[in-house]
Structures are given as C-alpha cells and as structure tokens.
Image: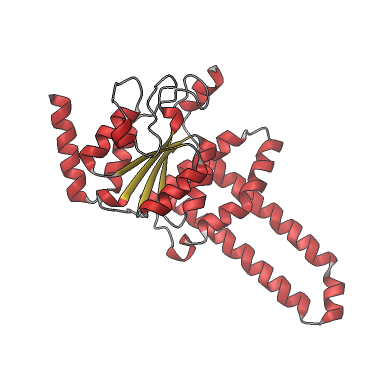
Length: 275
C-alpha cells in the first residue's frame, strides 16, 4: 500500500519512455539486419534485386521510425510536432512498446513507471498540438473505482442522474463540473465499455481518468482521437476507493475547451470558490 501511495505522487519522467523507445528501435534494427543478412543468399537466389529492395524498405522504415522518435522529443522540448509523423506516432508506440517493457524489465524498471512516462509523453504531444473543442464535444471518462465502494447507488453509464453527490468520493465533484462546463461525463467498468462510450458519444477529444495501464491502452485504442490522461490516486491500493486531483482535471479540461468557454468556466469556478 505504501508503494502505491508513493507511486501516485511520483512525477513521471518523460525521458524514461523516450530512452526505452530509442533502445527498442536500435535492438529491432539490429535484429532486422541480422535476419536480412542471414537470408541474403536465399533472397538473391530468387532475384538479384530482392536483397536490395527488402533491405532498402527496412532501412526506410527504421529511419522513418527514428525521425518519429526525434519528433516526439521535439514535442517534449516545445518544438512543433511534425504532422507527417502525427498519424504514425501511436502505431510506432504500439509496435515498440512491448520491446520497451521487456528492456525495462531487464534493467529493473517496472512496467508501471514506463506506462506513467508514456502518459506524460502523450499528454505533452496533445498539449503541443493546442487542440480546442467545444464543451459538448469533450468526453470525460473515469473508472468505477473512483466511486465509494460502499455506495448503494449504481452510477455506471448515467452518473449525472444517479449520483447523489454526498461528497464521500470524487464522482459528485465531477458531475457538478460536467453540469457547469457542459462536457459529457461517464463512469465505466473497463476498457470495453469505455470504447463503446467513445463510439456512442463520438467526441472530438477525450479526457480519461484511470491507472497507468488503462490509460496507456486507452490512449492507443482511441487514436487518432486526441486523449489526455489523468492518473488516479490510490491511497487504498489499486481499484478500490481511488481519488483524482480535481484541480488537475479542471486545468486539463480548460486547456482543451475553446477560449470563450474556458474563460467563462474559469470565472464561474473562481466565483464559487470565493462564495
């Protein structure tokens, strides 16, 4: 339990994910070259041009992937995120992520830390794109473990009407925020229901509250739909009476909403705080 609490307040390091992705690319490139070299004579028997064609295609793929990683690093440093790599970013991550996890395991880096770093990198890329949507085009989803375990009310799928806002968990605060700002808010029981909700609502942007594992898979699943991840807090351990930093959630939502809505929402929140 102490370990979970410490992880919740540990600042994710973006460079960890970048370093593992880069090392993964190098290993894949070396393995690919080894396979190509071993099969060289067999390919040449089929056609004298085949080894050159296959080798060239593989080299282009490696170079393009390397430039994609460079582009991600540039986004972290505040440089423009090259649009040519935008649609390939998460395809690249999907392909190399298992290798990165394996390398991390070899060096004693836990999967959770890698996933945490990935979420931070992904959020940075989304922020760098300055995506703005209307309030009714934003979907906020959170896991059911954010609800108090002893609560008798079933809020999955319809928290807006079923939550009694007793203040014993963060669901009530999110429902209130959704009413004030106008975004869609749903509580889901897992990744399948989350994907179904995205297909049903068809938002232009998503803010997801979850653990590292669910955020990592969810962000990749909904791509190219922009999704920002906010990690939940787990003072009672995973998947039980979790919490979320409401100030961070509000800041992320205001960052994604168009400026006019964002300003009005900020003003309303300040007035309520003063009241």
